[in-house]
Image: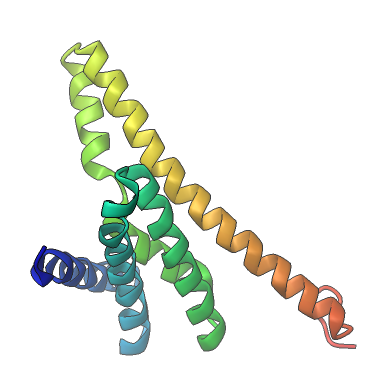
Length: 158
């Protein structure tokens, strides 16, 4: 595989996330670049795991792990909410085409194709959700542990 196979889709995801950052009113160039960097990173992880796992659902899971970790770290560094970074960076991986084709098969009465595309789309969406949930839970555990270790309970200082 040549480098364009990996880099061009990542650049496309990066620039798509710039557009979504404007739509979500992410303030400042740094915030937009962080959101877009998360989208490009997620797509890169998605592409790099393809030869290893041979399943786009598992690829989406690993990409969601990377995007979630990126968003958690950047949000803490900038003291901003994680949600804005996370939502924008996840957009390139959302199975919009799968949702469209699932509904198309449902409307045309193709039951077997409908069920196949529905299960695949739900698998992709579920993989993204579980990846985000795992990193979010881990970040919360680490924060709680650090607060208890330093004598801060409930995020307040003594």
